[in-house]
Each structure stands twice: as C-alpha cells, then as structure tokens.
Length: 82
Image (cartoon, rainbow, N blue to C red):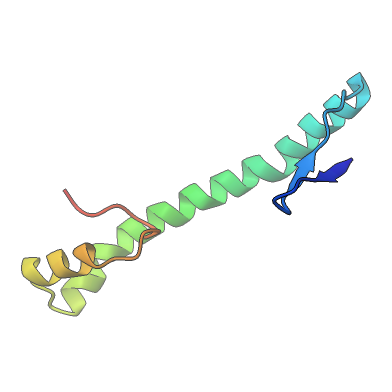
C-alpha cells in the first residue's frame, strides 16, 4: 500500500510477505534482474572493447582524451583509462 508523505513522495507502508509471496518475489528477481545484470555486464565489456579502436580511428591524442574525460557527463558507461 502506498502512502503519500508531506513532501509528495510515495512511501511504502510496512507489510509482511507471506512465504508464497516471498518465493514469488525471489523467483521474479531471478527471472528478470539477473538476466538484466548479465546484459549490462556484456554491454560494459563491449564498450571497453570498442573504446580504444574508436579513439584510434579519430586519431585522438592523450591530451584530447584527457579533455574528453575531464568534461565527461557523470554517468559515462565506462571508467576513464588508467
């Protein structure tokens, strides 16, 4: 059950799940979240694999890359090179 607080944010009311409901929740987690995590990891691996060849294709210098990473948006798909 959702309750609204004075700050207009939805707050979940405390509830107790039955054993069957808890099992269903765990099954759904396994069925949906685990595959999503696997796909996210595969995507990250591909981003890392493609990063260097793309930078080379654009003939980016280390200075260019430093500027790119210094001005990168906060949620870049990969971490800067070390």
